[in-house]
Length: 158
Image (cartoon, rainbow, N blue to C red; front, top):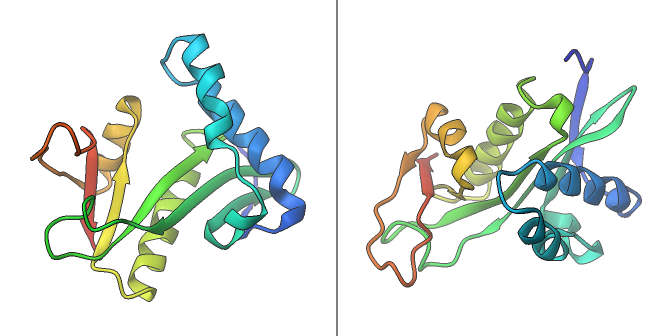
């Protein structure tokens, strides 16, 4: 789908309703039981206190069509001795998926990690998104402690 020119920018309070609509549409497309998606959706909604960690992709004709969310990762999640920026959300409206917008947001997260003095970018990927991150140079981290480690953690040194 041709979505036209996309501007990446920091989110504002006025964007929250649109951000949460994008996230809901993206989550409803995941390969999970409907009940699981419906019950987990409230945990994915963002509020004003999250704004400093949100970037949106905005199309002139469609408004906000994508969202990326990041924050410093805890030391338990990052590779040993590394400081990581955790990309904990990358959401693109389903009709806009495959347009390269997710890749642009990933590059923005990598840039933020570098500018913030982090060693790398960490992602905890959904099963169907794992290939996306691997294809963009992220390396899957080994599960060292099954009770603690997320199964699909991806890492890229920046």
